[in-house]
Image 1 (cartoon, rainbow, N blue to C red):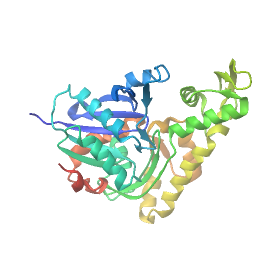
Image 2: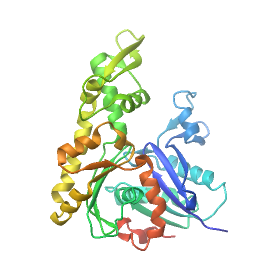
Image 3: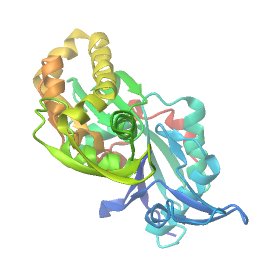
Length: 338
């Protein structure tokens, strides 16, 4: 039976899978719907996401990952197996799998990821830290003794790392990402306008008018929700200044993480980072004005990588050609070979 190489970006919000030379073959939400009466999985990914809020009480849609790590092992295992079967046309190909994990993941959390993937019939499993995969996906040559810094902002976590010679020199991981920013918008709209909105609406606001660098109140958006005082539908108009006030706290947490890594990075690498700049990857890299804010706060040029949302997944796929060089970038590789 032929073998295949599969790279998995196991994200809090989305799972992105690459396979062999085909590139990205799957990009679906990290959602599982299951029947509580029969304990059977009903749907995963896009199909399960469409069921959110629209199912009878005995069918529950859950997100098996929280803050970048597995929070529901059984559901995560079912989701990974279903996605792998989907991209391999249900053929048992005994794949080699590389899975991304946050740089601050614990040994217990790593083993949970490995066990979930192991039951899919994989031949060998490797774990790669997300900052390393993100830089590879951004097209950065990390094989040289030159310092590069990446800020990877996902749905559940933000990973900041200084990388040189295929390995992470210094890093920090904070449980702040796109989801926390969405929740901050929901909280602000609730408190300021007594209007209840969902996180999907908050995400639309974030993409539409959020600006963390130089908001001036000219960008506006109509938001619809439920008035908490009378229970009736209501529409209000919010500005980019409103949203700036809502999200500046979680954004500040990201800035603090960046500073913390810069403060402990060897001085020899700081000069390289100042020359090469900071790379922004992940869905959070698209937050309006974030690159300008980081540049203003650190004095280091910051740039958004090409196609930042898929950087980690593309780097995971490319890492198979670098396995002999990337051992420092992987977490305890020898423990997870089967």
